[in-house]
Image (cartoon, rainbow, N blue to C red):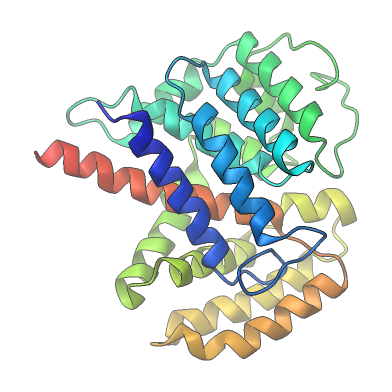
Length: 287
């Protein structure tokens, strides 16, 4: 049995690694942005950890009370996406048995979500008030849920990459970004720079949901092109520190036009957290 404290420690560490990663357009220790600071995100992770790791809470309750704690602490939406992605992973830990992977356990969690889970999450989303969220014809978060959480995510999956993870068993993370993280970490031995590699790789392949909710397709091509260049540079360098000037320039360029790839930053946290959980589960299975 993995303790709540151990899970909390890993979650907090994953959040900190993502803040240490110089993610152009997003908040990091290198640069604040979009009216938010690193301390806002640190405080958010600190207050959300306990409800997320509370073993007495259902999946939906974990998400709602983590969002509520964040809203009360920092007064803005800093980590809704992180919470939505990490909560099922934390829930999955309770279903890990000998020989079962974290992804196998996650599949069980996502296939057994309830209408009650959806109701809690709808309340959490309403409370967080994420930018660009409008009304929906079916399963509007401002009205009571009538389908399971996973089914609700299916309805949103064509326009939200976090929702897409719920119906693909985190395919983007397990089949792409986790490989990117592991490869980069094995080359450089640095978790923060491995997280940058994940962020750049994802943005070179997929548009950011947060950016497209705000601007449509206006900046999608620009971001993809810039991040493909960065991803290529990262894939060939032995020392990513040498790319800081390039990243500073890109960071300023994106922030000057208000582009914040927040969904991809959330996916980066979830990737790092998944890597940590995989190591933990592997250690337990080897004992």
